[in-house]
Length: 306
Image (cartoon, rainbow, N blue to C red; front, side, top):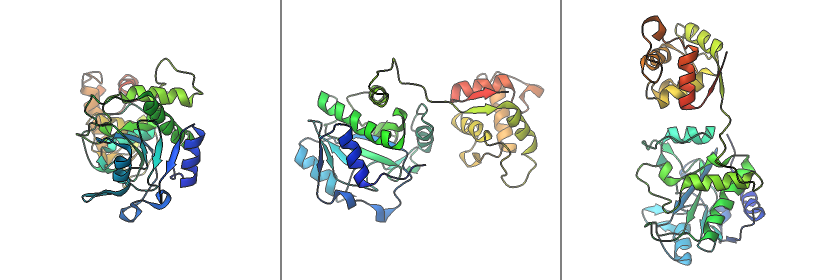
């Protein structure tokens, strides 16, 4: 969890990253905080504006529309690569998105497909609107792409985040196309390089994977089901439950770290599935084994220790 940066720190971070920053009247206190909380924050979201013209676009993002009050982002990045600060706090930029995506951003792992709109993104993401028509033909000047890279890296650097804490609106909310015209994977690669003292990696570095202790997980699977409430006997169980949720085998409301009967039943389904090893009988009793757990970890991003 991370508290939002203060307006002064945001400004300082952007300037330290070499950006030209234009401050618009009242931006430090212009927000939608009266409509809900701002923070904890978990990442940076990139948008395109579907508009042209710097002055008109900045004004729109600052004031909003009758059906969507401003501010509509924290900063507007124009074609010249200038960052216009128009708000600080909760802004109307992200809307409702997928909680699975949020969990992946927090864990800094590969993003799943966004197929739900059940989580408030305005609370948890910084947002940059980038001036572009979004029709696939409007070019993205090098100066603007460089500014997107620098702006996202600046906030990641202040929070100690990696490049996987940056996402596009299209990766968060089903049906959204922005930003259109460049690849977010490529942009994350650029941000990763910048955060690594500008030494370009061959590819986006893999995040550090959590480790699940097989013996402790097996003990939890045997002892948790008969226990009342949701006592957590092994914290690593939550990592496995999250993988089972991602696999569509466990209800999200059961993701509580208590490896109870529902988690055991879901794991049994995984053991029986081809991806889990195609086991049957006593080998598919829902008590994790090394081979099936390694298969789950390989697919959903964790390591297995004895």
